[in-house]
Length: 366
Image 1 (cartoon, rainbow, N blue to C red):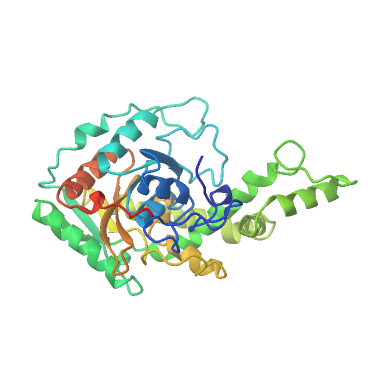
Image 2 (cartoon, rainbow, N blue to C red; image 1 turned 180 degrees about the vertical axis):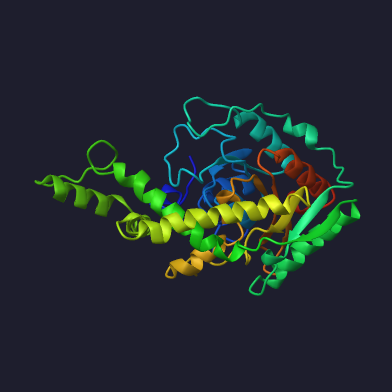
């Protein structure tokens, strides 16, 4: 068992009932979230590999923060049976590992059809390790201009662009592409995710599941249970999601967000007509100190600006270590591909990894 943000709602693992997880590279910094415990434990050699869930970046973001590899598979590729749902149209399970080969082995083990999950896709699982050839000659890598914008930390931009240059030197072709609806991704994601969270967590009412706060009246029991049973961030998201789904606001927010989601998916479809995979940053900044953004939820939500689009479009995406900040904190590079084309991501990620030393560096555990 590993620590995480409560109900997977957070980007820093500070929203856990058990207290925050610490980044093994610098104990006063965030490890990312929501699967921060999975990434930190893998980076600190407390386990060989781990699993996380990714609704808007919760595998890739902590993997980037902790200098390990994290894969968010295509929506429907891995069964979610037995996992508490956050946002059912976005959630996916995936591995967090020390290197790309381990990640491919882990995905081979957990991927596949499961009749107990209604979103599971009946599709054969390839031998992902067969894609680890180290050869990227002729591979077309798309560089989306909307992901290299003002506000992106210069250290992140430099590390990712240097990684792309290395791949180009190995024979890959780099192509500039555009994802014009990127600016709407965060708003679209948080409307959909919070609405679905409100619906999914409605069952936690003190009647059948988990906590029950005894009160003489049924309504009072509901109120007391839901007030005491959820942390501040989870309550915030449930309230916002309930508002979004309420009469008079459903069409204005939720329905409109679903239409924008379609446009975002079409952006990716058009980009993939020109390229085999996309390369971009995972986060707009390196990991920051614990407590730095906890008082400003909006600022924390913006940490997911480069990861949520992958979930909205149902794509596979992976974070691979590509450098360190001047403060000695890891930086991750994100690789995306078409649905069910995880092999292309593994191929590019492995070629990059074999020609760098980032994945071999280990935090000093005192």
